[in-house]
Length: 119
Image 1 (spheres, rainbow, N blue to C red):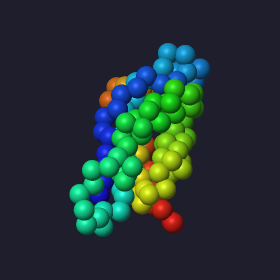
Image 2 (image 1 turned 120 degrees about the vertical axis):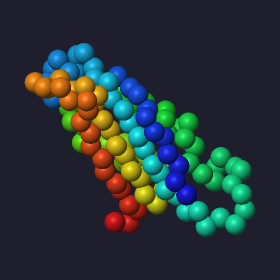
Image 3 (image 1 turned 135 degrees about the vertical axis):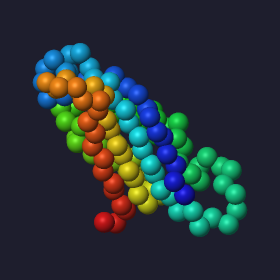
């Protein structure tokens, strides 16, 4: 079973340059968490799944801290989710910086990584 949060928008202090840290960048975060779905009964208990409200708050807290690179932000999110949800079999995180400050027009740049338990 996959539990996903798509298109979370934040204004984050992310960027290598001081100006990006000061002005904040608009970013989009999407997450997929895979859990064991070999359940014979319907899951109607929040403790038997991934609480996506808690995952949202966790990500909101992570992006509130400054990061220089999108890559490091992706890693932080994966590590925090994996730590908080040992039942997660895999985690995919994609972070996009929207309209990055480059010399030409670029809609977004993004980094995506997948973590698999035990690998």
